[in-house]
Amino acid sequence: MLSSRCECWLQGRRASGAASAPTLVESAPYALVVAQLALWVHAPSERTVDGALRADTERFLASVAHLERDGEVLLVGRGHVTRARHFQMSALADVVRVGPPPPDLVAALASRRLAAVVDDARGPADAPLGLWSPVMLEDVPALRDALFANYFTAERNDEQTLRIAMPAPGLPRWVYRPRRRPLGALGGEAVARRHFAEMVLADRRSAAVRAGHPPPFAVEDIEELAARDEAGLTPR
Image 1 (cartoon, rainbow, N blue to C red):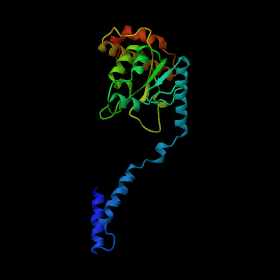
Image 2 (image 1 turned 90 degrees about the horizontal axis):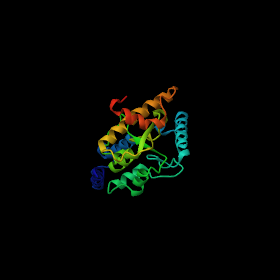
Image 3 (image 1 turned 30 degrees about the horizontal axis):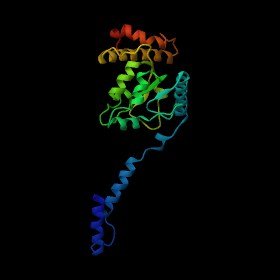
Image 4 (image 1 turned 90 degrees about the vertical axis):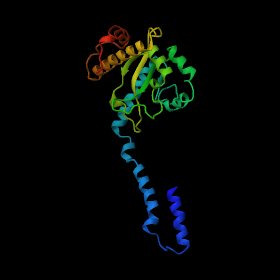
């Protein structure tokens, strides 16, 4: 708006003969606009797929395909990746801003219909929700309750396979599997403690496997181990 007003003012001066050639004042608005555009330009290297990114992507896609051997998988932040296409998280964020989450999604979680759920999560150095719209199921209370009560944390994806060309406020870090026994009878705080204990165990097991060590316990044991030892676990 300021540039437009300056331009009209300068055109009026030229029409009256007050100025016959562009001056520094006349050029300033255009220079500012060009500078603003230049600051918004990203380096091409930041958006170029290299060999390492391609290899990381292939490993991640292989891990999703492995999960799909047991049935339908919901990949919350990347709805185009799985065989059964799903919503993108940004679409769900638009819905929950104005009303409750979709009933069919809540029902799928409550009935444990999905073979696995891969949910986005912010990293330790990532900014909190703040002005961002929801970026993971945990950001929506009704979906968080349904997820934690009916699915246990089974795996933590390797950070090295989660590099993407376009940065996002969350990455698909956690894999959830259906519980043998839902936690609906427990209160919200007890469910949150159980979920935290499972995250610690899943992270510990995934780190051991990536390091080439024998897994300290099976994925199927995480649910029972967390129920037994949740009080003694501490974050790593």
